[in-house]
Length: 127
Image 1 (tube, rainbow, N blue to C red):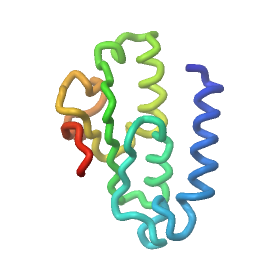
Image 2: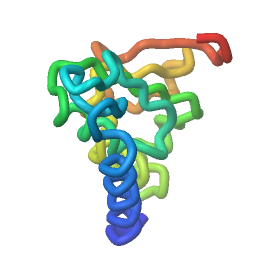
Image 3: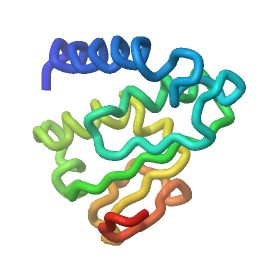
Image 4: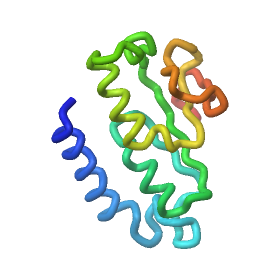
């Protein structure tokens, strides 16, 4: 993943957040400005929403739901594509989440996620 690709993703996230989600009454606005009480970022496509939500309301809880299989062994292999993408996702926002929710398989949680921030939940459609 190139720096330019990461920048393109970040710009798209920021533009859409400003346009739709951070305005008064938008879900990422501060709670005092009508924003959501708790933010769930579900899947890795939008990690940049996490720091935006925290900036708007630093004390609000932000949860990251990883409902894909992250192979921690591949992520731990320096220089691998999985490692590069994980590093981007972690640094772009997942690392700022209050809780990292994973499938109940320890191997799906990269080693740099603090155990105190890990929660497990099986696949479901009714939560």
